Length: 390
Ligand SMILES: [Zn+2]
Image 1 (cartoon, helix red, strand yellow):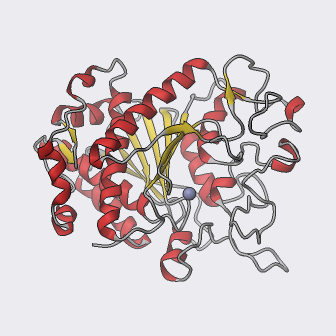
Image 2: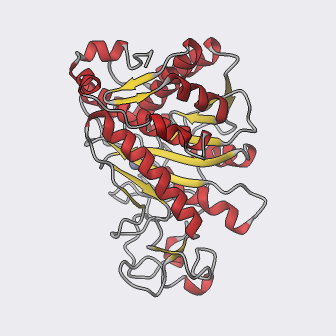
């Protein structure tokens, strides 16, 4: 086994949709990439009215694990649900009844590879490529836009942040950090495909963009530190345009309603604990701002920001999981990370499917026997990944 290429990702999603027609729908996203590729979303769950979770992978080209993890998770979940088994990821167990609960109680929208042009380029030409493959501007020489700086959230950073804020984005197509924000907010087909899903699937209430690497679980906001007492200090208020993005000050901190913060911390803790059970890795739950530098135009903040200006839109709590310890770990290590991501995302889905938390009674059963599963050969793990019944 090794990393999937972009054609194999497509084939895998199509195969799952064909194998589980009762439980899935393959949604063709409307905007083809600059290289003409069609991007699809695998919807898992028969009822789009149920609470939805949007899962993204492959936004950044060089981060090779997340698309494989999302394909693997989709395959595991569908197979276990159909066979009536549970799932085991290292020391983390998902009992069969919780698998059913996820299928019955949620709808998962899986865009395994948002940026296939970039991934193809990373896997065939420049391994450390991060952006998409937008052709360079007339007279220019630099290709590509950072899709995760292109969303319509404080996109115009020079106008929206303090002049001294070290915003991790750029108006320069040639910025060596590969964080070019693009010629306009949501200029990129990859970005617009994600926006399309949020626009057309009002059941989506949670959003997880899977990246690498740190590891860490990020919650809103990335624009500044957050506070829950002054609603006026918010990204829509131009009175604070020259003040945003300075760590450690009180001149501006992004408003995050206390109930949303509580929900994000609780869900983040569930994901973190499930991941830790796999093999002991710690994924701390921290604000996307991280106390270091602000971001703008990122998908997690965009997804969450949408309902503030338009109450008819669903509130979508946004997360970014930064998995793994490197961009392209050897496959044997990637398989461990795939288990971690799968465990974390299923824990989120289970919590969403069962908001009163009855599954807590069966959670957290870690034993020496479970942990030894991590010692099996890479080949065994490649063949398994699902080890039900649990
Ligand atoms: Zn990334």
